[in-house]
Image (cartoon, rainbow, N blue to C red; front, side, top):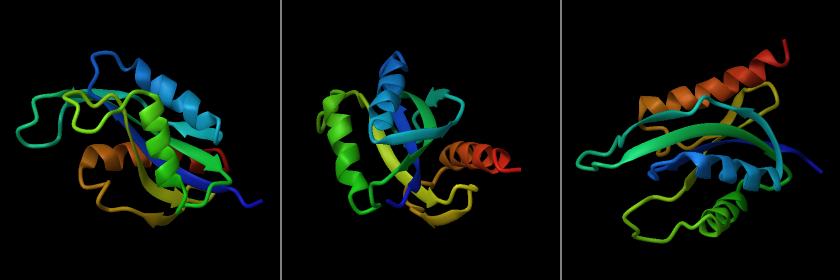
Amino acid sequence: MKTHRYVLLLGTSLASPLVLERAIESLAVEGLIEAASRRVSGPSISAGDARHFHNQAVVLATALMREALPARLKQIEAALGRTPNAADCVIDIDLACECDGHGIVLWRDDRKLGHTLFLDLMQDVLDQLRGSHL
C-alpha cells in the first residue's frame, strides 16, 4: 500500500477555531497527521467578505489516492456541519498539494494557493517535514 502525503488547508469563519481541531481529528481517521502549521486568524482574503477566519494547514499521510481525496474531504466537511450557501463557513478543507516524505512538492493546486497566507501555511508544514529528515 503506497502512502500519499497531502497538504490540506483548513478554515472556518466560526467565532471559535475548535472546529479546526475536530477536522484534524476526523482527518486522522484517514491516516496520519504528520505536520500541522500554526493557527492564524484574520479577516477574509476575499474582497467584500466581512467575515473573520481561522486557518491552519496539515500534512495528511494516507493510502487515499489524490482523485478520491476531494470527495472524502467533502464528506468530512458535511459531517462537521458545513452546508452549501450558509452564512458561516463552518469548515472548509482544501487540497493544496501532494508532497513526498521529505516535503518536496510533487503536485500543487495553484487555485488554492492564490494568497500569501495559504502559501505561508503550506510552507510551514513542508518545512516541518524537511526538518524531520535532516
